[in-house]
Length: 231
Image (cartoon, rainbow, N blue to C red; front, side, top):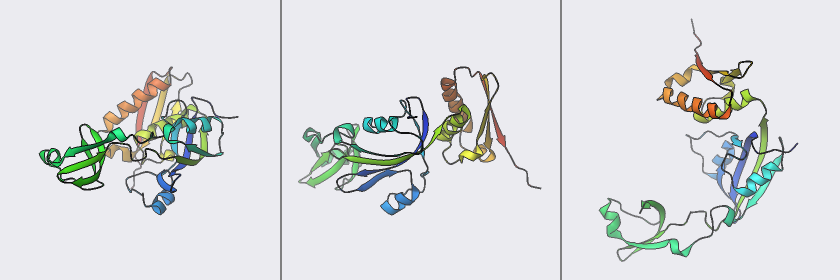
């Protein structure tokens, strides 16, 4: 059975630029390290995708809707469906004094924020700075290769991974969820480490708001933290 809009899936993927095979995004830690884009603060694991809700490139969403759990997916995203064609009108020249006025000393290839938008410094000459306001991946064709690791079929599984979006470093097996028989009450158990989160109260309120919009019968959520005592 192929996937449908509204399905929750875990998607493991890597995005490369077709022209030079450069990896620009991945959920795989080993691939990130090999490509030189690894960031220690990132959590590398399959991503939760809610079809029809999670923002995806149109060709990718269509490919997922024609696939199923356990299937590999490979799709080409043309520039017009990705970050657009390069627009010469988005190349602008500003006086270097504009930068100095804001305490910025520009260098070639710097990404700067100017006029409320981000741009790359192309060149600096004669007191003038040439900026490219096009997206860095404009004109690029992207290739997405991935696998649908799992379809989340139960409400409890879905809750676990929704909660995890707000606490990405918590392993899913440390989160549990159970609904009352009539579906009006939800119990979510979390590990003790969440007590160390800054503004944990605000995070729990955001989770509660998110879950209340997804489960229409839900009237009450009980969060509990499990503390293992060592004697």
